[in-house]
Image 1 (tube, one colour):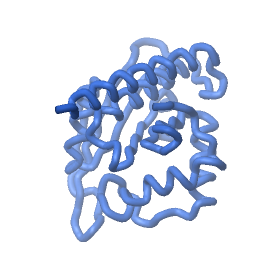
Image 2: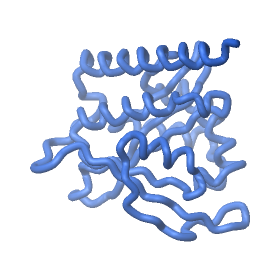
Image 3: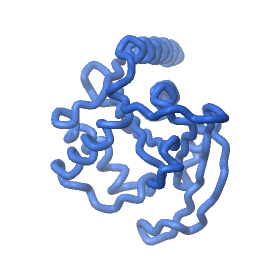
Length: 205
């Protein structure tokens, strides 16, 4: 397992291929049309200028990705980030999402972000449970707020706070100390490797 930052021009098509089934087959995302690759590449590139956009690979194969973006536009909200994670179906239900998500939050905290938010489709029980296991609390429910596949869907708002008092400055992810970032990524890769060893051991007769 390898964790790295996105390279938009190189990775956009691969990420979109992983994301496409979520758009076409689920209400996990409320996006309804698959974007064109140039549009999606521009989206990824814009996010990656300021926020961590992390890829999880298994022998070069994309297993999942996680990223953050601004939670709201007003200046007083600038210490807030909204987080997202998507795993390939092949790699789902193996516990891989939590270490990747924890890395995302550690990097965001290093940047100066304080409040982490997730907006989850109400029927996505697995994602809600993962967020709860990582210290997120449910703070709101928007009933029947998104219409997809012929029905209305709720969204659950979840929140985790990393600090209190006077917040500091926000720095772009690209300005973080490179050694500290490598240390955090190495820590996550060790966690993922240990997790995969346990997964393999549990499959043995």
